[in-house]
Length: 306
Ligand SMILES: [Zn+2]
Ligand SMILES: [Zn+2]
Image (cartoon, rainbow, N blue to C red; front, side, top):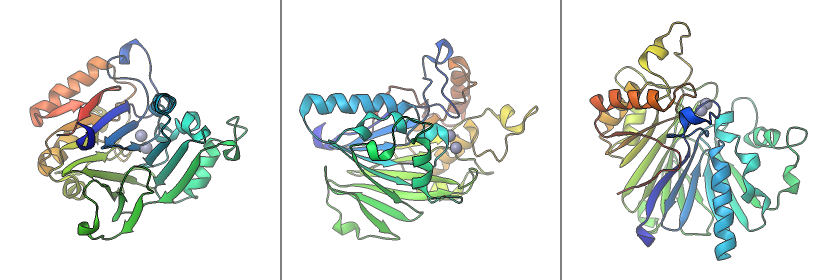
């Protein structure tokens, strides 16, 4: 594969909170973390507890090759299940690491303050001044494009347009979109493109009747759409709890987007911690009757984007 390599690996697929144990052993218990490798560049989407194991792998690679660690990290939002792995992400403590982190503008306080709060004494033994890595934190907004020109070079950030002709052929591009339907600051969607192929990440999103048209446009023709499918239809409608407005989708909402956008493959993710492996497979069977090319995101699985 080499230069043309474009893969996605699920390091955490669970929403809400971790759920390890025998009932989730097939699809995994760690919270959201996805690794995309495009050529020799690494992009990490979300920093749930799945990130911890990825961090150990990155350190092992560094010790085996001596090559510095470079990663572009994207946060869809700052809820625990998308950030809780960050304090335990070993590359942040190592001087060989350069991490470019991009996340949302929040309603209540700065992104930096929120991330610092989760990894500072007294809730964490180390303060950020004790971390030896180089870290750069930036906001991204709807309409932004990040261009990753080559391994080791810092990402370039464009707002509302860039000249596609000026993008090097081996660059990775990341387009950003925003959804309003996740409490309280909404959610960022990411479209990662490399060598003519594209992957769209749409977790923690809630559908609309007939599908989310903005997301459908953003995901049009994608080779892979990774979409939230936290609920069965019965759970979404209740009783006892009514989960409308909680910012998550049913499997049917995910398939509506996939079908209308004409994606090649749909991966359901953000698995409900209350859903064991059998429950997930029942949802998958239902989803496949609606959109045949559907799979369940599974912790540890790598998919080649063709
Ligand atoms: Zn979540
Ligand atoms: Zn959330």
